[in-house]
Image (tube, rainbow, N blue to C red; front, side, top):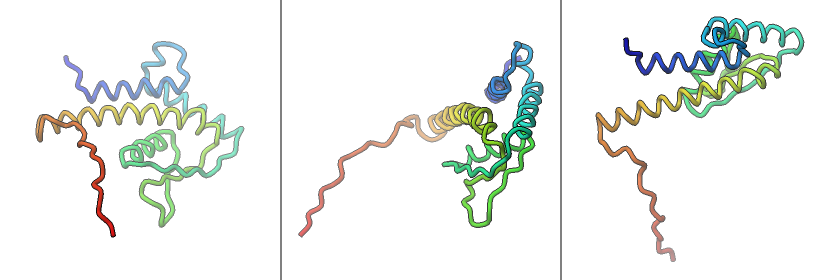
Length: 148
């Protein structure tokens, strides 16, 4: 049975999560539920030691924001934003150590993996469905205007 590209991506995302959970054995690294539980336990321990503070996260694109919100929710963290904040802003109350040691490094790795996948898919669709040359536009020197 052939594994689809999407299934490979999902498996890769699970392995990234296992890495940040501190999985010790190969079996643990492959078990996404085990990894998630380890991270939840780590978050609980950090919340007992460190007080939660409000963090503001700002993203350049909707894909990154959606992924980050999903990661927060996966760990039982309630994302929000205030009225008037941009849609790409996400607020959350978390211990600083969890953000620095687990959440942000894991998100960056997941986001890089997802962005790479989206780039590959987009390039392929453009080449096959629109035009085979999907290279960047030419960069030219700016025209010199005559001013008086």
